[in-house]
Length: 100
View (cartoon, rainbow, N blue to C red):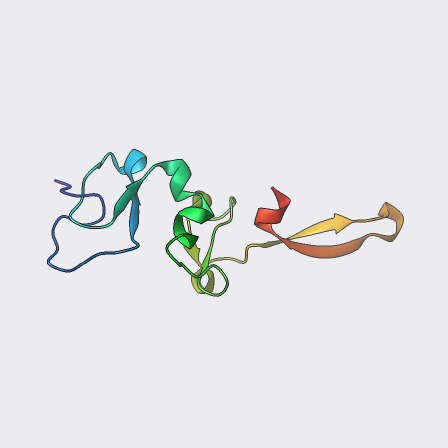
């Protein structure tokens, strides 16, 4: 049986770690902080505790179902978009969050 959301038991301090209470159905844990699905897909949940979204983490709606992912082990969060005059279109890349 599942005993906890993030971990079932720990003697150590677990800080700045989260799990999805709605998806898991677990509302308690011996460590970490339970968050709703919406909170788990919100960058501020993680930047408020200093997760590095410049070089380590990313949140992209089309990757990992919108949950945080490690930049080095996931596809790029950059997608091609056409911008400007359609006769002289240029391909640019924008971060997925800016396209939403």
